[in-house]
Image (cartoon, rainbow, N blue to C red):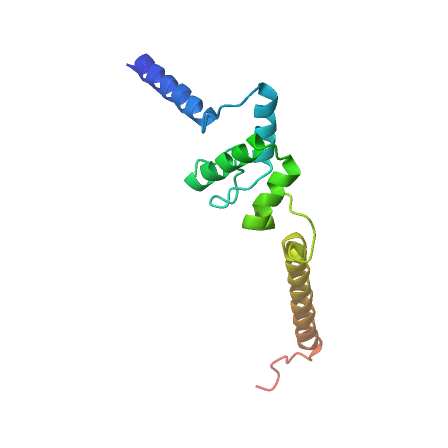
Length: 147
């Protein structure tokens, strides 16, 4: 019973990994073109998933963009031209490593600005609490002798 369950589980895992590797088979001319395609699609972001690259995404939109990348490769476009085509169409967000420019400065420096703002809030809160606590600590204590 246990062995047959393990065999079924192993077969399911093998079938699943085969499907994951063959997301979208395309008719490449040679192995070099396939490697170029894989490298290029790994540098591009799936606009639906946002945390996956085009090479790993199963989304229909990612499949369409992969087909467009393949079509542009077949037309003789180089990687820079293909990336520029996608940037013109979908903005710099399609690139996993977008350039630093006036449109992407918040993307690059936003987390740092948020961290600095949070640090300023924490420092101000600590200073305010220490100013409030200082007069309380230095105030004379009442012994209760008035009773």
